[in-house]
Image (spheres, rainbow, N blue to C red):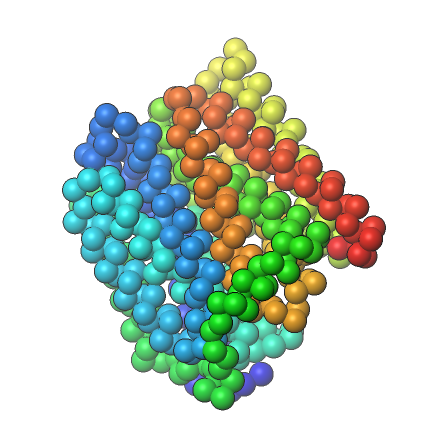
Length: 404
C-alpha cells in the first residue's frame, strides 16, 4: 500500500463519484425519453431508447484502450482527458436538434466516460492492495449503489423544471466538479518508472489468448449475454411503465425502490459464492431467471387485473437487476482467473468486448418494442436461456481445468 495525500474518507468519496459517472449518465436520462421522443423523433418514438445503448457502445469501444493508455501515460491525464471529452459531448447533446446528432454525441459521451470506469479502479489498485483494497472497494461500492436509485429521480426533477436538455447541463456540472476535485486533490498514483508502453500487438495477443481459452471465452460470452439482459431492461423499462401501465410519473420512484432492493445481491453473493462456487451460482441465477421471465410473459397475457400485473412486473424487474449482482462479478472473476499474467489488458478486453457485445445484442430486441411487455420479458428470457446454456457447456471446461 502506497501513501495517499487524501484522507481515506475523501479518497472513497472521490472514487465513488468517478464510478458514479456511468450510472448517472444512463439512469438520469430514462424519465426524459418521452420528452425527447416527442421533440426529436415523433414519427418513430421507439428509436429514442438508443440514447441508452449509444452511450454504452461508445463506452464499450473506448474501454478496450483506456486501461493500457493509463498504464502508458498515467492515470490523471487519461481521466482528465476523458472528462474533457465527456463535457464537450454533453454540450453537443445539449444543442442537438436531431436524434441522430444526439446519438452521435452520446457515443462520444460514452467514450469520455470510459475513463472513470476503468482508471478509477486502477487508481485504487495503485494505492491499495489485498484486504485494504477489498475494504476500500466495498466502501466505494456501498456509496455507489445509491446512484442508480436516485439518478432517475434527479433526471425527472430536472426535466420537469427545465426540460430534457437541462439534464446534459447537470452532466457537465457533475463532470466539472469531479475533474476539478481530481485535478486539485488527487496526485498521480502511477510513477513514471512503473509505466508501460501501449502496444496494440500485445492487446491483440491477449484477445487471441482469451478467445482460445475455453473457460475464459465462455465466461466472456455469458457476461455479454448478461449485459444484453441488463441493457435491454434499462432501455425498455421506462417505455413499459409509460405505454403499458400508464405509470410514467411514478417510474423514478419505483426504479429507486428496485435499485435499492437489487443492491443487496452483492451481500448474498458474498455469502454464497464460497460455498457454491462462481460457476454454480451464476448458472443457478440464469436458470431461475429463465423461469421467472417465462412466468412474467404468461402473467402479462393473463386476465389478471392490471394493478396485479403491474405489481408482479415490479417484482420481476427487481429480480432482473438482482440477478446481475449474482452473475456479472462472478463471470468477470472466472474470466480473469486464468489471465493473471496479463491482468490489466485482460480487464480492458473483458470490459470492452462484453459491454459492446451486450449493447449490440440489446439494440435489435429493444427496437421490437410493440407497446406490450412481451419484447422485454421474452428478450430477457431468451438471452438468459442462452447464458444458462453457456454455463452448462462451461461445466465441461471446469472438469478439465479445475473448479471455478
